[in-house]
Amino acid sequence: MEVEVEAAKVGNIVEFDGMKGKVEKVNENSVIVDVTINDNFDEHEMFEKTVINHKRYKIIEE
Image (tube, rainbow, N blue to C red; front, side, top):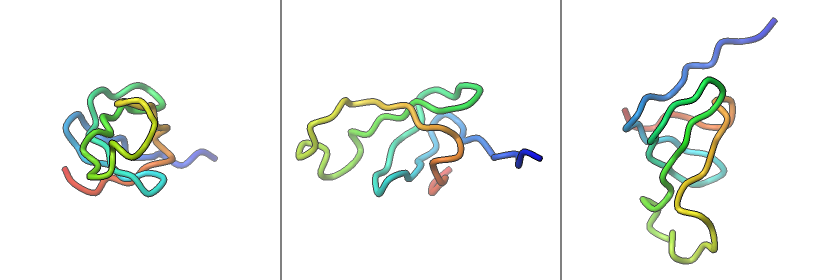
């Protein structure tokens, strides 16, 4: 039996893997988030956006 996960909405702030991201697009199984909102973004060698499965994040601000 699969548990229904509440999907974030565009504009929500989500937390995942110790980072925060602003939701830019909601897909069927994932969201695309902008991670440049993190204070230490420049320290990370990563892309500005990433894809996160609905099961891997927590909505912290709607």
